[in-house]
Image 1 (spheres, one colour):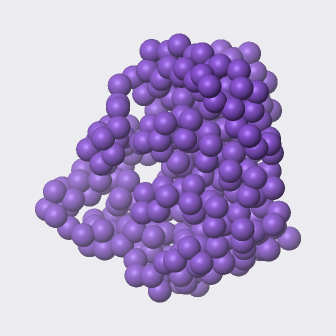
Image 2: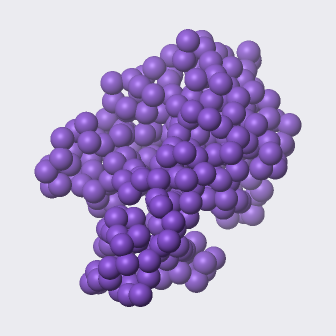
Length: 340
């Protein structure tokens, strides 16, 4: 199981320094998210700061850029990194797309399928000057009179898709080089709910299992006092629990009542810091890797044999920068121990 890392920082310089430290500790990929920063700009900064680890977006929003812009940014990032880019894409949710970005949202699985097709077609043909003519229900692409005058580092940059629901998860298995989860995916959920859908998608695409990198993401909090470690992760659990879309996920873990309590607290207008108070320890234990170094190493090992890759990230929600920084430093130390 490959060990990878999602760095945090108050500045891009700190993000880059954390990525470099994780690379030196043995992390094989560093992943950059998109919400409070641009995933692609962050990836560019980290690409300059690292040397051997792959640089991935986890994830860039697929519908808030045109497929051509995404394809161009990916080519540039692959050049900057010397062929180390992994393009991770996700749909986001309807409200984020429509209300925050004024982006189209209809038949997201169809749109994502066509978006991936367009990106790959652009990479393959952008230097030839030949027309690119792709019909589609949600994302047609018709390009004439265009020829990229610069060479491309690779035309087969790997594309990973983030998904939790069955339709998009099957799509990842069918067409992508990798699948990426959100930070709370337990080994049981991965084994019982995700892998059957990925297998179905692989079969539909006529692809072998080894064609897909299964990347599970895990929120990791390490402290000599396991109570402190669990409380650091509670805000992350509360963030996801406040989203009704994940009702089936929490019900799978017999945490429906606990999620309802978090949603009630969210409706009361509690801040992220206060929301963590609604998250009991057993909820944190079920969905994160939190505890002493020995406990966290054991929790991470439970994914071995199910996931191909694990993406480790520090808790961030409801914490002060100093608290996140401390958690991240402990996590990088754990990565070094795991990669020895």
